Image (cartoon, rainbow, N blue to C red; front, top):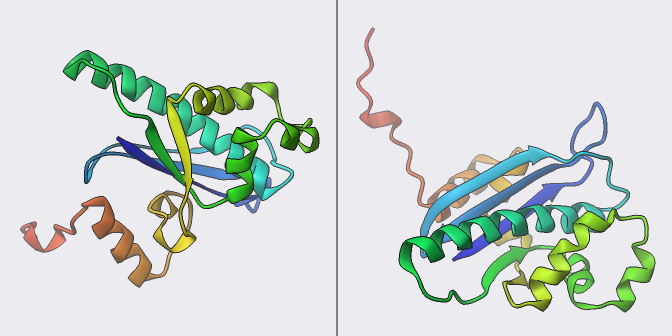
Length: 163
């Protein structure tokens, strides 16, 4: 299983709150997704990305429990692809936390998931980040590319239109 995570830091024009997105895949098939508004105004893009990684991590734990129940056995660590290297470092380095005291402790749950080998955060270029489709307005070309990456297909031409 793998997942992609993204946020648009301060994306809301009315209140400055970020919108989060996550996609969850089993092989090349998307099995779940999430898109929601964060509960607070993030003070930096790193904080916003760290928080969404934690939220995606919680979903991953639930999906792993479901998969373990359905297929049994142990699962390899779930890779969560993220386009922010600083937020990845925050999950791996205790010293980095000296600069993140303002982040609510509940979001440090992601660190324990990394330490116990449940998940692995891995960097991915913003150009390849599938979760962008859930958090941003995209140019048509990128939207079509990401939609094809997710395995989603435009079936509007198959729908019989009544006049």
